View 1 (cartoon, one colour):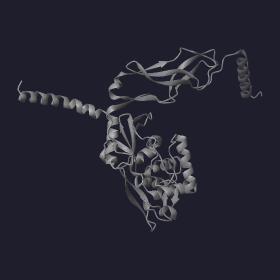
View 2: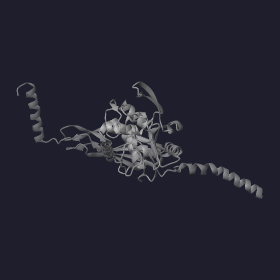
View 3: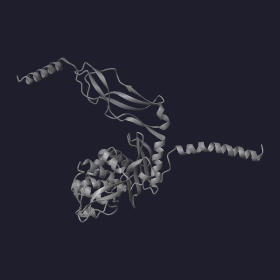
Length: 387
């Protein structure tokens, strides 16, 4: 074989192998520039990608996710809020509120999430808790309740201060909780909207607010969540995207390439993983007969999330088996484990979810039957007016 012929053969082989090599290189998670980052499935909380996910970082205005959910859960969105001088003078990004202005809490919430108004954050805190310090206590209590243990707030807006920190995991976890609220989800997925606005002369007029989250325009499946930027935190973004029944949450912190990195993370997750969603936590699966019980049966409740994230190629090979006895003997107690859901991939068990009793079922004993008879007799006589 001549040298020229050998060159063409080698070149041909390289061209044939190039698509395979490229596909293999692209099958893994993307390289991310962020100081810390995470990709999380919103339904299950499973982490699909992580980089320094529990490291304490300045969260900037992603702090406002917590401020927003507390405002929504207060149940006072229709309140009228009078803006204080302190709120109006808050530094940084602003709705341009002014002292004495009257505006609804709902409009403040929209300005908080779309325009990232630090002034709105202070106004919300003062209105709901009486003071910013009291509101911060509520923020930190909520973080602990949610399990965001690497988070501590010292203000409601995210301007950098000593002791104000969170982590990529915690921010994704808080956003996961917040996105379950339809009011929150609707606002953070809005590109632009108008709010009622009272000018300094007291006239009511509409005011346009544009979302600071450019990803809503850049990525078709994006539907949230919140930007943040300070000198200490750098550019930050908590984002979300939905395809079919699957919603993913991406967080990038201190990332000067936050838009592209967030898109790459979300695209990677949507392209390579699917959500196998069998049933919801708390759903009644079936009924199980109870032997020798005062009641004949108890409902079988799914005690955890009967869903899991699987690689796209594994999805067709997922099976779920229900492991329950044909009957159960009384006494049975509410919350008692009585079986399991077992998830298999290619006949390998990969996840189990407990099945529990929905209620107590007492054992049918002579003593209980006697007292049950007395109780029924008493109610009957009472209904007849004899007691």
